[in-house]
Amino acid sequence: MAQKAVFDALAPRMKAVCLRYVGDNDTADDVLQDGFVTLFSKIDSYSGVGSFEGWARKIFVNTALMYLRKTDALRLSDDISEARSLSDPEPGVIQNIGYKELLRLIAKLPPDARTVFNMYVVEGYSHKEIAETLGFTEATSRSKLQRARLRLQELIKQEL
Image (cartoon, rainbow, N blue to C red; front, top):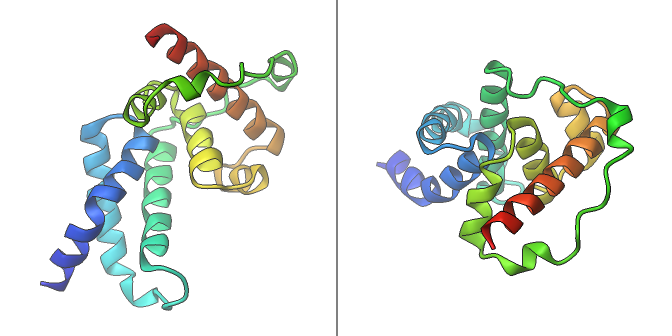
């Protein structure tokens, strides 16, 4: 009964987390289920420090990252020399689009760019933390974020 209450309280928000990382609904459901299995098996490790939802969110982010690693979606594809030539995204473009539409467009990003974008912009990880977690350099993290922003800007312009 207690597990059902935790599931009912967290599932909608954690599904959104999973969907942001994996990009499609069916896979997000699988990752969500795996995340709850992990959460319930490790619930005794929650120390009570910080919010329970914040602790749970880390589990779901890590579950999504494990899925992306397992499916090789995060393989390095950026040449750092190419990253130097990227320009800054046009300011203000994202302000012209709604939240749900933005999430739909984020899901269209390539998995590696979407993951770095989510970790940096949504979850608040630093480039150093992203690099350590995903196993590449900080420069690669910055490059992938820049590519994600530019691609997202292109997608938004196409939609407007």
